[in-house]
Amino acid sequence: MPLHYFLCDLKDDAAAIAAYEDHHAPGNVWPEVVESIRGAGIRNMEILRAGNRLVMVMETGLEYDAQAKAAADAANPVVQRWERLMDTFQQRLPFAAADQKWVPLHRIFNLHDQL
Image 1 (cartoon, rainbow, N blue to C red):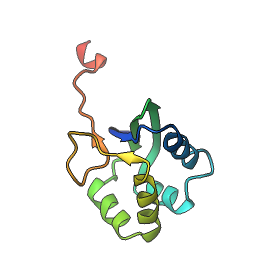
Image 2 (cartoon, one colour):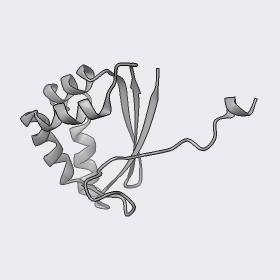
Image 3 (cartoon, rainbow, N blue to C red):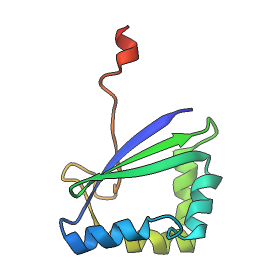
Image 4 (tube, rainbow, N blue to C red):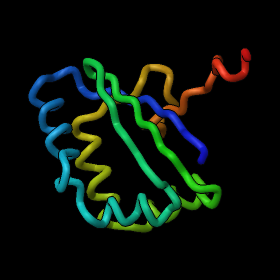
């Protein structure tokens, strides 16, 4: 299954970071958001944090289409409400495009490729 990696920052504020983590605790993500993720062919998703830097790891099926997911999310009012709420805690990376919240990472090394 393909893996996708993304970066985003949180506002460097302890209360905002704690609130963001609370919104992502088991059972706290809105069911419609989880359904949107699963319905797009995302098999698993993890968000990890170091300081105020977030890393998202997505494992997708071959049917996953990022453009279709973005279009479906844009048309889903509940997902849009969730995104606006999360946006209150997040800040763009300095090198991100103006409309880009999560910046994809590009692999530059894989041990298996070296063997």
